[in-house]
Length: 390
Image 1 (cartoon, helix red, strand yellow):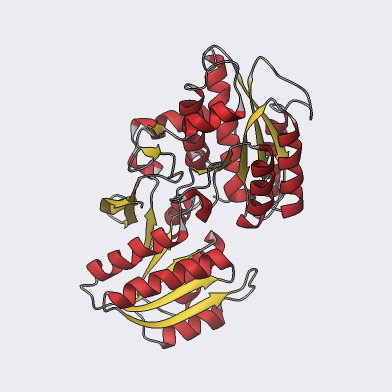
Image 2 (cartoon, one colour; image 1 turned 180 degrees about the vertical axis):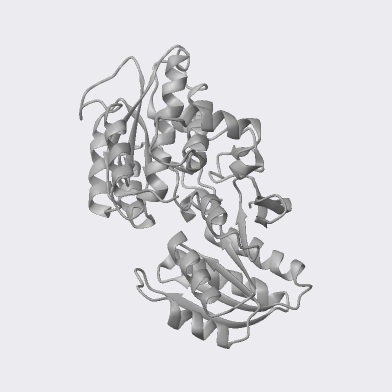
């Protein structure tokens, strides 16, 4: 099920109800600024993240808030435009009551948001988008990330899995999107694969948007590859897979599992599409999945299975705020975020642990899913593999 423009606008309207007017002081609440893509190209990922944050803190506030104080989020739609994101961050930074800025949009918006955060000494949290290099050791003191994916770490795991699953005999074709993070991620994956002795026969880079994937699929199929590896925007990953299938390719494709991927796996029912993720799927049916789906039912126009990124971000913010003595300041928030453990309750394979020098996590964990015909749902074919982040 894909988010429609109507869904996105409904999400924007719901978020607007939460946002106080620009510049209004809220001295009796924890104030957070959220710059998010609600109606732009990243809306299918970022819109659900924003909705989940709203739903999460509606519940927290209904239960008495944090340390007896409510959490208020001012929301602005940046449409994944760098200038708009920078203006949002500048506006948030100019309000001394805002102790945290959240960005959820394409990576092109990151630099202007980081610039404003650094200028004003405001911690910045990236949620629902790829984690920037600034959160990895040695971390920028003000930059943090809860997002589930990180290009080079992800493709390194995928290349190792392909080596293991194929007994080192894979004939590998790779696909990236013509954006820096995707290219860098796949190039790293190729390097890991080749060091493992895997034969890499192709690397196609696809520019977004692409109306016709058949030429790229044809080139890949002609290499006789039996495994594929892709990392990038979901639309490129899934369309190249479908184009390969239309040409009769019967191999396996490793793709990074974005929020939408669980529903897409249900749509395709193809056991050859393997999704590697650091987030568990809602089809696992854990208590946390049931809790999130129940909380979101009727409160978002997105499928409730899209809520995990925003929910984890909410868990992280709550864990940090519990350590922030009243009255809150940016320095107190930064200090709290420098030493916090986030219990995701099973939404991720590992707790998220932030330290002073590591604002990504000290350990990550990956799981591989494929469609199970017998169970008629996605099923883990490789359970959590822990990866140390140094």
